[in-house]
Length: 375
Image (cartoon, rainbow, N blue to C red; front, side, top):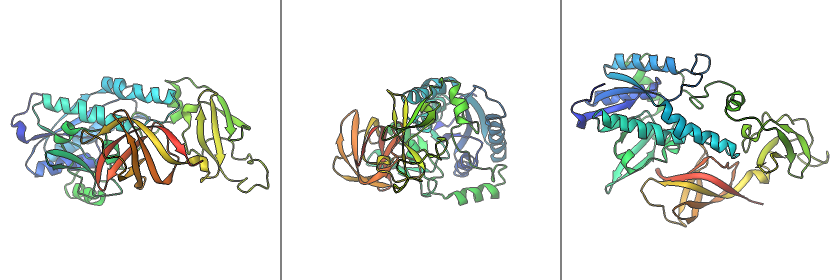
């Protein structure tokens, strides 16, 4: 597509085929923006109808653009995705950690490659269907939670910087999901009732183990209780995560003395011994080994461009949809920070992100490297 004119009022909207990005484009068109829809193709490996819905996504996005009456094109960022997101995804699993590729995809693809593409077209702004808000205060841009607390997606956006936020619009930030579907239905958008997508886009509905084993060879080892007893075998530490209960294959094994309280409780993954290639498990959802009162995070990103104050009370999320957990930042430097929780948190997982908030303002965060148990 050739460069667009009137770039000061042109916005390029990332359209996934879903109802959220469709309504984002519709609302911007109604506000008088010159809207261009872009469909981003980020995955090509085994892109077939059985597991990957990208072909149907493209058809749906194009149909919406036609109804709204906006320009539309598809771009391929698969090479960048493989290099910047998927390579790190595999590296983290090799290290025994549990990554969140959606966070990295937002920072590297949706708000970097996509933004660069929009600039090359002559546009000044980009927009997505994320449930989040941007506010300019004193010459700085803040990332705020979406008004709909059940859909807020600021957790996935904490790696954005000032330049990216300055050029980004989130038209759905002040709306609730039910309102978005109502707007889509009343406007006659063909995807108004489409089910929300879940999971990692390139994995789709396929079995996770089968997918991962294509890129990382399985490495079987022992499943051990915290007292060292061997309870079973695992196919590879990469297939398991902290707090996991299902799929361990040891549900019928008692925990030590049959008379011991909790001997019949379910087993949970509490740690990975990378040196011994052993999966460590314990019984009971609230076992102390599943609780952490502190964590260290690295690979930090602070949205304001500088870290928040130490020893102030903030709130943190160590996983999406988690309720805000009161905390303090005890130590922070250019490379890492220590977060201490007011109450122990369940199944804090290395490789996942800890995201910090001050009220509705997302301050930034980092990748969890280590945790501190209450024991």
